[in-house]
Image (tube, rainbow, N blue to C red):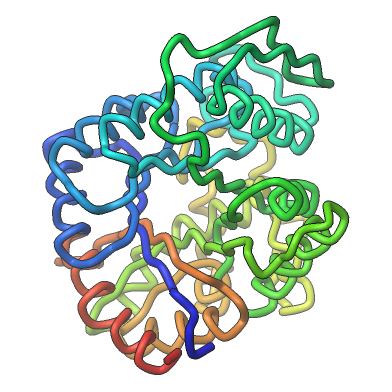
Amino acid sequence: MKDRQMKIGVLMLGDASVTTMVERARLAEAMGYDAVWVADERFYREVYSCLTHFAGHTSRVLLGPCVTDPFSRHPALTAMAIATLDEISGGRGILGIGAGISGFAELGITRRKPARAIKETIEVIRALLCGGSVDFHGEVINLDQGRLSFVPPRSTIPIYVASNGPFGQRVAGATADGAIMEACASVYEAATFSAEIATGAARAGRDAKGIKRLARLNTCIASDGRAAREAVRPLVARYLGAGRLRSRTLKEQGLEIPAEVLEAVAGAPYAAGIAPYLPLLPLVTDRHVDALTLAGTIQEVTDHALALSRAGIDGIIIRPFAPEGGTIEETIVTFASEVWPRVMARVG
């Protein structure tokens, strides 16, 4: 534990004005965050436009999508975009890739063999960044003699795979620089996450120790821990009700919602947000919140983050939420200035 370089990042959804997001990116950099990520989420503000704007107003933080996908953007277009961002930012580009879901219904997109699509996407992007013509015919991705018409400043832009399922996590272990898991807030889930990455790495003959494990967590901090949990509880209801983000240890923790209850909210469209899942709120206990988010007082969040660190998590990406009467900016500041120094002091 002594020499581990723990990292922290901030995730923005694109649901605030560009001006507001730029100020939050600047605040994150000033507070010592390592990375600022923007979701490639339909139909919010466009991800690469925002990241490019952030690059002009920051100088140190890494910048990237968390995450883009192989289906709404061809991997060649992603390679072009991330290489351009890397050039504009002076080598600060990072790339998060996941299977995606937002806007797929509206755009008529079919998500086919997602783990395979992610693996093929990484192969194509890395080949394009290295220069030359790429001819690739996979099970999902195809490229006929494609090439970038400029020389990327770096051929080794870090690539992270975001997945809550075993197949995607094994792809991360086999091919990526790091892995991201959303709602990975329990030590049980962190252990399963790490095990799948290690499995993928072993099959590819890689050293799993070199693959970064990042937990992507909805986060809220308040002097009243209950107020912090209330701010993220509706998102937990959506996690549990939609079932899109697999948490494979909920059952062993005694946190599964009865199947007959879940049937009542089954099939709600992604674009509907949290509204269809609000009837589940009476069943969402603090144990559910703590298993899927990072919320509470400064001390509670510190202890929670430290437990994740000890379980093998190498970094935390927060999506900050405001408690009643508070602001998102306060959560960004408090996590970096109050929580993280205490975590690092105890990790070291």
